[in-house]
Length: 113
Image 1: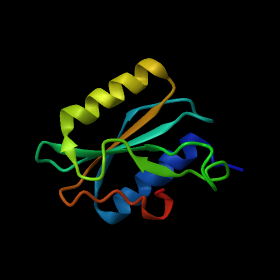
Image 2: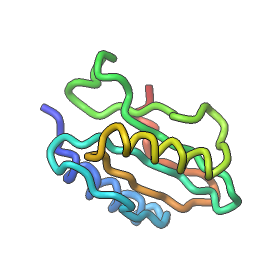
Image 3: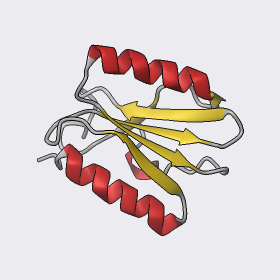
């Protein structure tokens, strides 16, 4: 059984704080099953963006899995913001968490596809 979105986000925000990275909830989505997007701002005009992996992937039904939304290398922060705006138009129930970390740490290593 998958952890509710609200609970997962609260745990992720605590993990970021524990690691010394500033993280802020930018958009609150559906508390039970809203899709979660993680934007990593490197504070130099670039950002990485991670979103939910397709549900058909192994293990994605029981636990959350992540994939890069903009490619492997960080891109322009405006590209990440544009991607999020399109996702919000498509699904207004999404969550958006923004992490500010110059090193680009995302703390999703065990959940990446």
